[in-house]
Image 1 (cartoon, rainbow, N blue to C red):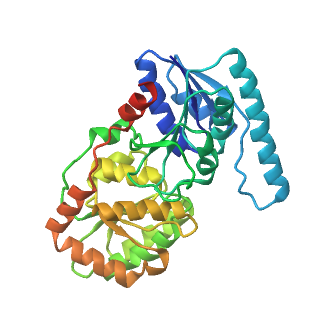
Image 2: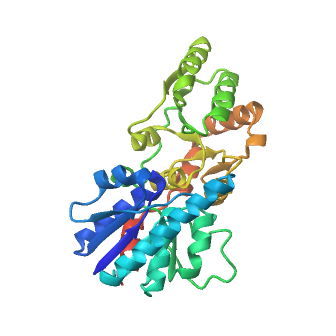
Length: 348
């Protein structure tokens, strides 16, 4: 079977696409992956050898500038026309799209030629690009059991598959807590600031409790945080980048971080309790955090309620009751069979 996989924009869209591409190649299917320039090298480095890569133009249309919006729409339109012509001569049997604006041209071209199209939504709230493209989709595959914001007139069949994660996370699935009083703090580059402001002060408030911190932050904040932790005699490893995130999560008894789809699914795959603070400009993250909290795996806390007093009190209570952390870890765990489920859904 010839299967076209559309992805692009960010690594969060690309990695699941590459995982599924690898599985489909193993099953003997012919795979072509289309992507935009932002992730072209990532796709080339990570795709299976037998898969082909096709470059397309695409850009998000969320810019405030009217001119930039028109340029972005023009790129998407040109790419859609190019793919319609391409499919006239070499038509795939299936279209699998992994969201974002880089998927829209391929989805539309597949619709023109009546190619069965499968779209994956990462978040617990459907994104703008996916919401727009839903009118041309046969099946929507989801990372979470419930997805908010679905179009009321959507006719697509919805299948809960989960979100593919890297093999190192799967190998550490359901790892028991070590109870070594370790906390992992990770906010990435965009979302680190409020965590940097609140977490160190809250840890310092926890008198008499020895806590070990691994704290990922922006490069410019590393020295300042190292100095604070040292002055307050808190054992801390402050880093600007964590190369082995799966091991960092396994080593932690609790994670404090943002709630991007990949982060939440990685926590669920390993089974780790967490305090999640969604980016206040991102409704997708709020939905993801709420989904995790509903499982019983942790807390979803809005930025305006994420205070030093609340965090210090919550951490003290959790680390004085290790059995509660164990129960949260157990509830957080969700078996991840996403790659198999997506491949099965597309090929059946």
